Amino acid sequence: MPALLLRAADAPWRELVHVYVPHGPTVAFTRRDTRSPGIARAAAIAHDAGFATAVRSPGGRMVAYDEGAVVVDHVDGRDSFALNADHHARVLRSLGVDARVGEVEGEYCPGEFSVNVGGRFKVVGSAQRITPTGSLFSTVVQVATSDRVHDVIVAVSEALGYDLQESTIGGLRDVRSDLTPAQVAAALADDYRQRLGTTDEPLDPWVAGLAAEAAEAPPTDVPFDVDAWARAAATSS
Image (cartoon, rainbow, N blue to C red; front, side, top):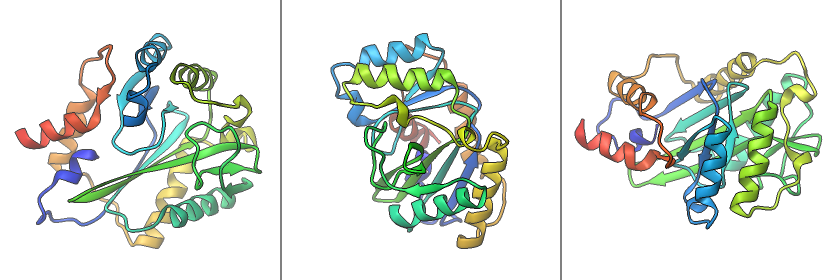
């Protein structure tokens, strides 16, 4: 998705929403994280736990997820953090979850517009990246938070020097055990269709090719830099 921010001004589309369930465990760092003295140790902890690592395009702090989560990447959206958070919370409430907008004290990747369950633990976090040619609003929804995700969030946060209360880590299935990532992804996608008028279409071949290339990148001890890769890929295309 970051490569889409570098597209030509006359690209045939103006807005794109990608809602998906990740294929494997990932720790996504931010530029802020990479400036921490503990970044090398944090990356090693993630790798030892079986997580791929990347430096993501949007800001905030590190986040970890696996196939128990849902990720939403919204390119060129004009909606604010507050409006997106409100819609995300509404979707979760429609699924029977007491979803509320607001930061829980001691949460990982803290943010004013996080979404929590009953004021107890965080289940949704969002971050944004704005460039001269576009914007990327990225959201992670924790549906089934596995022990490995919980443990790596704790260990990596400690390595980076971030305060964290473990009780703020959770997933939707902690209160709705029958929910699946696929169900949550479908509900979120339907919300975007209704409020934005989006239609379901395959990714542009150029975009799909970039995604496939990124997925095939060999693992390294250094976190995969999404922005650097996107710039190189866009330049060579």
